[in-house]
Length: 368
Image (cartoon, rainbow, N blue to C red; front, side, top):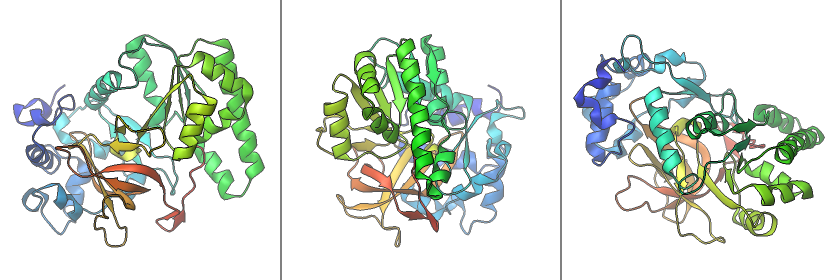
């Protein structure tokens, strides 16, 4: 890869390396994103409007709260302007992914090739894939512009397996729900279930990637329950919330032969937070972010001050990497604040779920 990114000065930002010194990592990231030779056109322009100097006034992760929440600007900005100049005059092109459009027009983020390769290495070494034989994957989740399903193209290429995918348009479902067309929503879900059933009837599949609403719908169709229990080893779910009672019922009453695992994700942090090990089936899942690259704060949305541990607040997310800089993003989710793991920057979260309204708009979760 050409460009300034090969300078040893920036080695700490290598996506394949887990940072061991959070302060040094943050300083290098700020120097990169706000340096004239290395920063992206988007952030170099945006810096001119800030009422502080990121290179002088940001001393730690708490100071990321100085930044405005710029994610709404990602609805319109040209993705080329998000690429840091440090990747060189002819940089490798990123993959572009979008949010689900829950709160309006979708926002776009970029994943640079070096980030994708490192994230894939972490994914394959993680709890979903490590220690089990590679198998074909059925993605019954949004693909296209959505990372939740599209990333499995990389997985099957690396593992030399097959990805089956279902056509799912979550934005259309949200629109139908917003218009009160419940019968059309039900018909659409049944259409999706028909496709899932056809793949499982006819193909060898060992892993199912889906969302909680679709998994609940599968549980209501006896033939799908039979197929999933007989063929699927792992159900990897995400993209919508699931209560403790729903998770217990799905895991123990409907799909007892299947290992269920999840991640708490947002397109705007590029990489999800993993389930904490050792929690009981009747407990909320705690999710730990990949600090210091991804960090959470759980706050009172009015004051932006942290709530007490064990209390529910709104989630503020920071993503700090070589390819993207997205600090101080007040997400549309609330969660219970949990103390992070030893050495972790910021909070962990439990029981995430959407707030009722966000940015003046009703939040519609739909099927994703």
